[in-house]
Length: 167
Image (cartoon, rainbow, N blue to C red):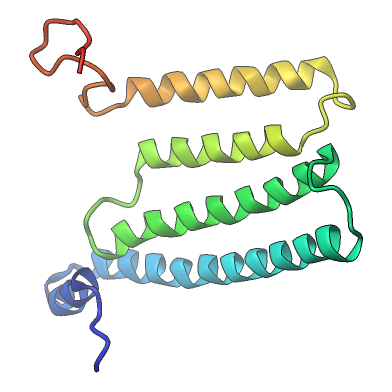
């Protein structure tokens, strides 16, 4: 049985001759970045596996210990951020979206900020740092809300009456 390539990759190959020189350049850069990020994902995943095995199995530490939790979930968030970044590049390669996707960049920044909140020891950082993280989270959230591309928020009435749906 032959493994078939995804349709969008076949479309890129088929349409390559129709692309402008800059579109080819942009697609090639995104393709190379995809492999670079894939390498980062593999290395981060390998380090996560080794870290979990070392911390939980070999040292027999309590997985509910706060510092162990921070390290493990910080590593997991690193892998998830890299996966989301790589997924975003797939849209560029297949020409489904442009090179800059502000909403997705803001979501990735929010993921990175969530990772920072997970790994930071709130007892050792200055209160100003905690306030700065909170302000950054608020600013990114408001920015994301402002650039929704006219999409209706969750629970909004599609009829435009301004009342939330009850279903």
